[in-house]
Amino acid sequence: LFAHARDGREFWVSLLEKAFAKLYGSYEAIDAGSKHPRASGGAAQAMGYMTGGISRRVRKSEGDEWPEFFELAKDMLRSGLGGGAMTVSCPREEEIDLPAGEIKARGLISHHAYSLLDTGGGPTLEWCGRRSFMRLRNPWGHDEWNGAWSDGSREWDQHPDVHKRLVADRGYDGNGDDGAFWMLLEDIGRYFVHPSWCWFSPFLHSVGLTGA
Image (cartoon, rainbow, N blue to C red; front, side):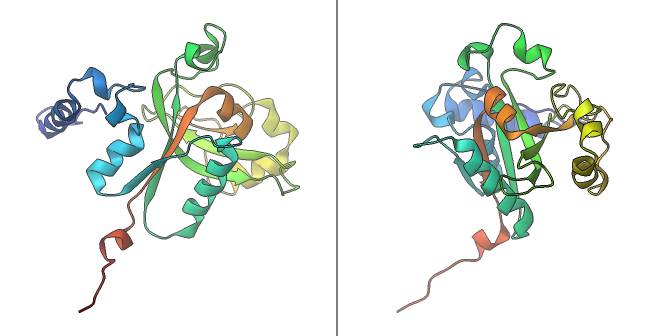
């Protein structure tokens, strides 16, 4: 967890960062992709500490974890039951067996967490060709995916109905360099790891038991 205050006169963010480093033993231990056993939950785990929410990393079982994460994300985003945040991590190339320079060439930042903003389509829907999409955001607010279905790519012109449903109807800027972009689920599975979520619904703080 790394952060800084927008106002240079505020120091509480740096103190919070130092507290996390002290908890885990060093600043290195809280770096993205740390192998520290207590820091294995990544960004979602850090959000859980700061909000009191429940964090979880979706892990591989007998199949691919990404379809499971897609359905989970879709349900959380559409339910309206409290708040939540979801993240994925773009690892170093050697960790996922990609050619040297591949991640950078695609506009992504290795060793970096991205937030999940939205989902679209799905394996049972005809209008999207049974494709599953996720909208991610680089928290830096710039540097975006430039592959298939990226902002301004030819896929949107080739499939105007998909553009209408995922961009125009949802009020997104399809060409702005704001750090947000759509990706196919299979591409996310190729370039990202550690799908995680943190649920901080107010309902979590109002559950109790009564009895004699």
